[in-house]
Image 1 (cartoon, rainbow, N blue to C red):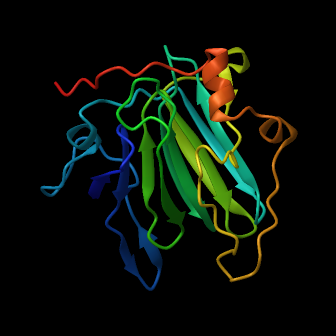
Image 2 (spheres, helix red, strand yellow; image 1 turned 90 degrees about the horizontal axis):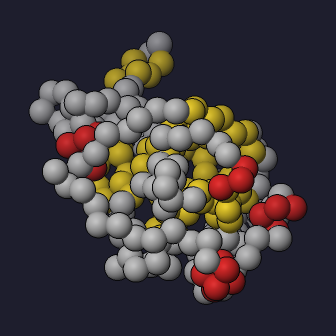
Length: 205
């Protein structure tokens, strides 16, 4: 499995090795420790992933989910992949004091390259579905708790995410947001209200 750190500190992209023949394909989308000389999750990130919840989301083309984050502590780290269809997966640094605060990065997750994104606690997460029935599954380090969940508006100009306007088939996308996401505050408003997490130096030991 290959990996690279995204420009947002605390987020990584993983690309698995796929084994295919005329019957189909096999891959390991999470592995720790590594195998065949390839680094595993802990070697890449310098931490472990404690699994508390696994989620599955199915979205029509144009559905825009996020940007979501949870109170820290405990926060909610996520390990995200797309098992059907395609999405643009986006990570936003919402941690006050972070060297990459306010920055974002994105990865195309689809059923071709089958990449995965890991984001640490305190980072914001969202995605745009690029075709109908795009199916996203993700592992979470803590369970969902509505009392500690927050959001940033995904179209906030302060963050400036460059969302695609065309789907995977080249057709125009009509963004669809939930009522909650459409009413989410801007990054500046969230910062002023005191809900943003605080940056903590990563533990590389």
